[in-house]
Image (cartoon, rainbow, N blue to C red):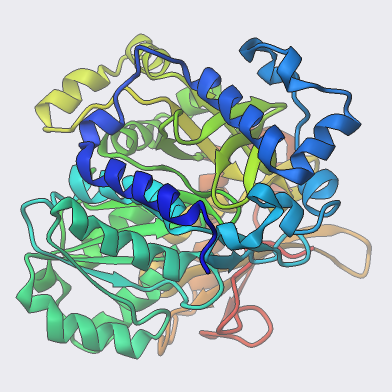
Length: 500
């Protein structure tokens, strides 16, 4: 028998999803604040989630004797002090895994893979983020849309979750037709060729490096991507604005704020936030103004920039790490996922941009961008995905920019691995292993050109690198590796951009 609360929770979520418009769902509420919603959620967890109740007891906290302004005194949860300390059932509502009906498994990039149950009600809440993208960015309310799910299908969170959310969009009246070939490149191209002409537009959803493989392979097989009016949705990695423009160019689509969107999602949290045409326009400005970007974001690399609904996922930032509160099947309160980033209210962002000479609201009006009064979250990713050289942090995001410039981008896939090597004399060198595009025979000077371009972009974007690393040591050693090289770029596994 289903869990007794399953039908009522799903019915309530479905009714809300069907009857409340996107505009109303994302509007600021006059009757409560985001932190009050987060506090009410925490008190509910204290009463219904055995693991969280025990965690509060161990920390000497009785929520019944406290007020909403006590939210920030609640313990910060982590994988180490919460997920690894309590069994799965104790972390579920009422200590019952059957309150959910599906599960995803984390990638295990930070440790042992973890099971994250969720329910259909959780999916309907997350489907709102997909609705934002397909409505505000792709106009799927009026344009028939073929959604091709290119995330791997299986226990990972990307594939099945995206498929379910795209299917839910039809219940909101969107003209979305979903098909899920997964990470099967041949099947993706077959489906696009066969079904694409029957729709106004095609949306590819997947991890950035794999989507580029799809596009490049399609070009090599003679596919005219322009005919399919392709847009794309990415997740899982931070990409550069040069990469966005490169993809738009190869697809023959408009290179603007409406051609693509990135979503910020994890197995433990579902989808936390999404790019909007507004956030993309802002990010493109920051890409051309690195000094202003460093003043706001505090680092010499450009983060992914999203907007989020603070009533759906409540964010905090402590010591430059992001915490969230919300229910994705396993309720989590003040959970630290160790993503490096920051937060800014909508008005504070527009004021900062205006003070630096960019009137984003005027630009939005001129370009027909839907402006929603939602706060911003930026994400660098986990800080252990960098290499240190002469005390300077070298970020993969800095190197990515160089590989996406002409003419280098014509010869490489965009994948690379950073690492520090030591010669027989004990001297350190920083090395970039670069994957060549399939079937290419590179010119003799490509490695030298790539090294010089990487140094140029690092010096432009990363002031720490420019000042800490002696000029004689700034040029990297570049090794050009064959496509899908078994040691550096094996097929079928999640790519890592650094190696220690």
